[in-house]
Image (cartoon, rainbow, N blue to C red):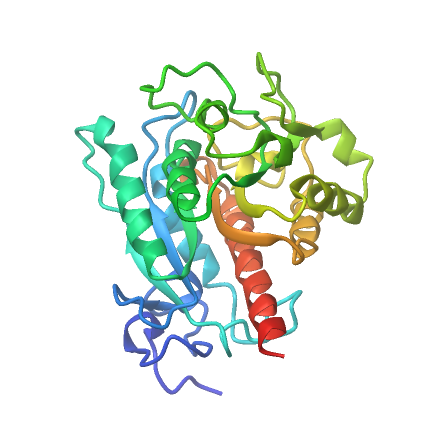
Length: 318
């Protein structure tokens, strides 16, 4: 049946309800959510952070938010798999657009992201951020910890990101070590999944290496995550290079030997018992992508975050 309206991102009158746009047309927002700066009544807000000046290899993740939004158009108006529901029947989600950054003064970037994130979190909405390189998670963690206290970090990644940091570097490979040092995350309640490189230190964080998860079922990985986080408030960061390059070629620092998108999505699907207070998807780099493979994987990770939120709200309403 033809849609009664198009460009739902601008024409929607409510933050609830599915869109009717064809997947190949209409204004692009994340999953066709309404573009707005008004967060009143929003359960979750999607926010892009187009920054990639911290990469150590291939740039391009500044285009990640655009690519993820474009790929999200593939989610049509049927009940969303694997949640078997219209995610937006009761979950009010808006697309806030992107963070405005000064491309000529990167030293201002961390404070700008943190300040804007705090403003969004003050609304009470769940913040789902679309990177950008992995440095953006550092100010996001600070903003969330300011609201919730030290966090349990669940990190899907091929890299530990615990390299030396003097507190001033703009570097996507050191934010975890800095977060531990500054008490933003609790290493005893944090876990990294899919690691396939070595860093000088683990900072006391539990690591599930790539070869380990290759031999584990998705439910076993999810159990390890739940056990490690131990009921603490959780921030999930998903670096798309956690996936094998076969499933995510469009990223700055690909590492062979990783898991499939199907397996990691199955892990995410089973994290509904966690007290997740914030999440991001980072390091999608469209210039190195093919047929939107990586962008689709990133968009589906973000869709899973919202699916877990929709289920949580349904449980709270019962």
